Length: 424
Image (cartoon, rainbow, N blue to C red; front, side, top):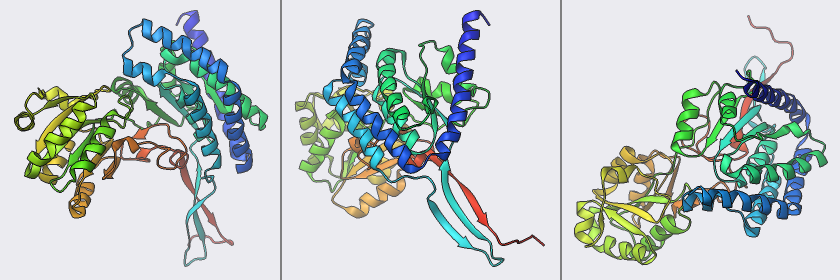
C-alpha cells in the first residue's frame, strides 16, 4: 500500500472508531435531545442555503460537462425549493414518534419471568449512495432519530453538495450537544474509500445500505463484510385489469411514468389485460404519447396501437429513467403476476381495477416490496408513507422491505425481568 492508500486507510479507520464511540452517546441521549438535533439540522440547512446551492451549481456544471444523462443531472440538481423541501423533511423526521425503547410485545411466563421485546438501534450504519444530495440530510436525520451513528459516502458527482449539506447537519448536531462523529461524511472521491467501508472498518460497521444503480448494489453485495440492506433499481409495472376505468387508468399511467422519470418509483412497463385490451390500451397509449412518452410494445400491443415501436427482450428488464415505457398485453392477473415475477425487481407494482377481488388477488400474487391498488407507483416514497423521509426502498426480504425510515433502521432486544428465578 502506498502512502496515499495508507493515509486513506488510517482516515477511514478513525471514522469507524469515532462512529462506534458516537453510538454510546446516542444510546444515552434521550428522545428530546435527538429531536432537538434533527430540528437544528433543519434550521442549519435553511441558513446554509446559499452555500449549498453554490456547491451544487459546481457539481451540476461538472456533471453536464462530463456528459451525465439528463435524468442523472435532475437527480443531482438542487434549487431553492428542493433545499426548502430538504429542511421540511428534516422537520418531519424530528416530529415523528421516536422508535427507540418501544415495547413491541410483552408477556409473562408461568415461572414469573416478565419478557419484553424492545426496539433498539442497530449501531453504526454506512450508507453508500449516488447522485441525490438530499440523501445526506435524510440519512442523517433518520439515523439520529433511530439512535444510529452513520458514515455517509456519496457519489463523486455530488461531493461538494454533500459536504455543504453535511457541514450544516453537523452544526445542528453540535448545537444539541451530540458529538460530530454521530454523522460523518467521506470527504474524498477516491473509490478506495468504498472498498474500505465494504471491508467493515475493522468491525465498526453493523449495516451497509447501498442506494444507487445495479452495478453499485451488485458490488456492495459481492464485497461487503457486513450485512447489507439491499435496494435494487425500480423496474416497476402498472397493470390495467379488464375492469379498469379508462380515465383512471390513463391518469395513473401518465403520472406513474412521467411525474418524474428519474425517480426509482417511476413505472417502466405497462401491462394490459387481454380480456379488454381493445378498450383500454388505445386511449391510455394516446394519453402517454400526448404527454411526450415513447411506447415500445409486444406484438399484441402493437396490433392495437399502430405506430408503436417494437419492444425487445431487453426492454422488459430496463429501468429507462426517461420518458419511455414498454407495453405488453397479458392474460389476466396471473399473466401480469408472471410477467412481473420474470422481469420485475421486487420494488413497486400497481394494478388499476374496479374489480377489487381481482385487485386483492394481484396484491397477493405479486411479491414486491410495495403493491398499489388504484394509485400511482410514484407513491413509492418514505415521505408519502408518513415516514418523514427514507434512505431507499429495500427490495430484499429480510429485516426491512419498502421505504426505509427510522423504524426500519432499528432492531430489537429482549429484556427479561425476574425475581430471582433459576432454571431447574
